[in-house]
Image (cartoon, rainbow, N blue to C red; front, side, top):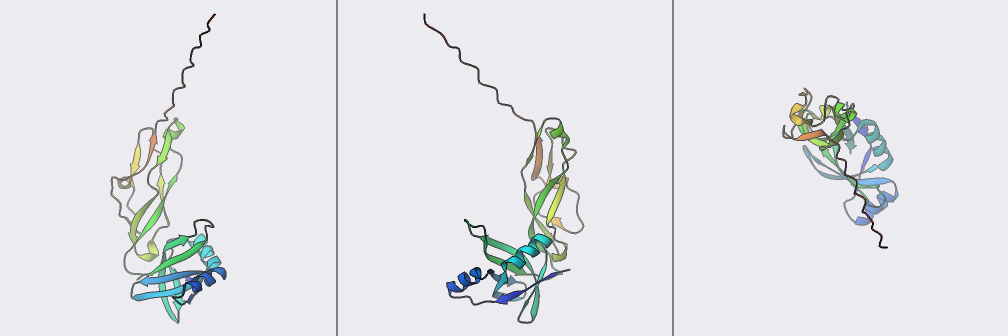
Length: 196
C-alpha cells in the first residue's frame, strides 16, 4: 500500500522561488529515478511531517505530477542548521517490482543479562543498508540483546534471515556488545607534612 502525497510542480530558477516557497510553508524538492527525468516540485511541510511520523522514512509514497502518478521514496532531506527546519528534500521514483537499497535504523530491544550483572551495553551500529522491493523495506530492524552477557557481542551475522529484505552489511560487523564497567581508581590523598 502506498500513501498519496500532494505535490506541485515548481520553477527551477530563480533562487527567490525556493525562498518564497519556504515562507509559504512548502519545501522545495526534486524527483528523479526510475523512468523519470529530474522534476522540480514542492510539498507542504506539515503534510510531509505528518506522513513521515505516521508511515516512516522508508514508506512508499505516491505523488501525482500533472496527472502522472509515480511511486517514490524519500531519499534525502536537508535541514537548516539553526532552526532545524527542512529546506530541501529528494524523492526517488521506484519500480515496485525491483529491489531498492535504503538505510534502516537498528533498534535494540530488551534488557541484556550482562547489564543486570553490572556490565554496560554499547551500541556500535545504528543503521545498516538493506535491499528489498519498495513495499517490503523496513523502517527499523529490531535486535534482541536480552541474552548478551558481559564480554559478548552481537553481529549482523547473528541476526535471523528475513524473508522480506536482505541486510547488505558485512556479517562480521558488530551491532552491540556488553562490556565490563571500568571504574577509575580514586586518586590517593596526598600526605601533608607540617613543619614545626
